[in-house]
Image 1 (spheres, rainbow, N blue to C red):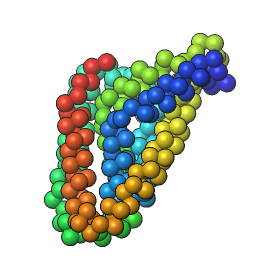
Image 2: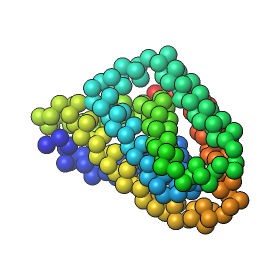
Image 3: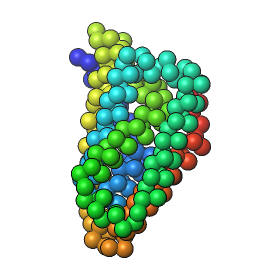
Amino acid sequence: MMIDLALLPVYLTTVVALLLIPGSDMLLIASSSLSYGRKVGVYASFGNATSGLILTLLAAMGVSALVAMSPMALELLRVLGGAYLLKMAWDCIRSDSVDAPEIAAQHNLARLLYRRAVMSNLLNPKALIFFVLFLPQFVSTQLSASSGEQMLALGLLLNVMGLAFNLLLVALVGSLGKPLLNSEKFRAYQNKFMGLVFFALAIWILASQVQS
């Protein structure tokens, strides 16, 4: 057994509560679905899940804990994350508005949002701190599995639940955004809208405190 069944109900309840709290991940996925449709939102959701799996592996191996103990490393992550999001914002805002309908129809855009979702989460120091501080709270001494193995199982469960929640969000927001995607005026400015979203995420990270 990799997860203490006595702690499982509390863990699941906590995860659900955390998923319902609006955050940068929710903003990116919802905005992607609203601006470009469900397909792009699904790719962004899988990008978020991919970064979550990477952070889970790092947490299980203890690597993330070492990084989290270094204020300089966290500050570097924060600056790099903010700079990366600012670049994405600039790329979207400076894109030619007349190209927006064609860009939105391309498969490459979905893959681009996947990569952006992965990187924006990996470069967010608060995401790393979350995995370092949250998962160990549910590691049990009553199990024969090591703390790393338990954190891996807990992280995988968290990511599965997070992906399911995000896909549900994509379905909901994608349906609401369908009339917008059929609007020629909105399509002309959809890249600008996503640019503003990335700018807001950059400010979110750069202005945040990463102290544990």
